[in-house]
Image (cartoon, rainbow over all chains, first blue to last red):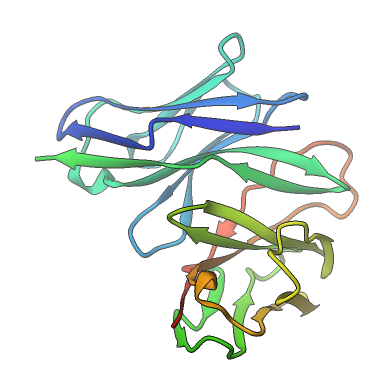
Length: 115
Length: 120
């Protein structure tokens, strides 16, 4: 069975500072991993995805994530935070079930940006 | 592309009333997912369909909830009767999964804007 654990329900950083959102996964098969972002009053948008092609994945808005099998981690980073990055971020893993696929989401991390 | 369309965007109803939420997936997608999001429970998968057939409804809270997908371009989630604890944001998402997959593949889901349901 697949699952993800997001460490820290709330992260606060200063504008211009490094953003680091942590995610650890559990999977009995090679995982496919995602980061989604949810801005206030909106649905979830795909930030980036890992599909085993490259361990460092670049996404939209300057975000990237690195897949580390030895640490079972898929942390999300951005070198310099911007006020517009304030949102909730979800790590997720793809699960194969009965000939169809579904995504298992983590509990989310709310990112706040201090001016 | 219009993306996933949900209606209504907001719904306020009284306890005991029937509520119907609607979703139009992205054209060409063959899988549809209904989620519920609350502060207490986070994002929960309620049910998902593949080629209009319900694959997994284990997340449906109870018999008051039902979902249908009569065709590839429309799905409904119905709550009857509604209760205050059903208040949440309900999301619909769609995805394209090959009909004859050869193995585990990853398919991202595209989310609609959600319906905010308030039951008083």
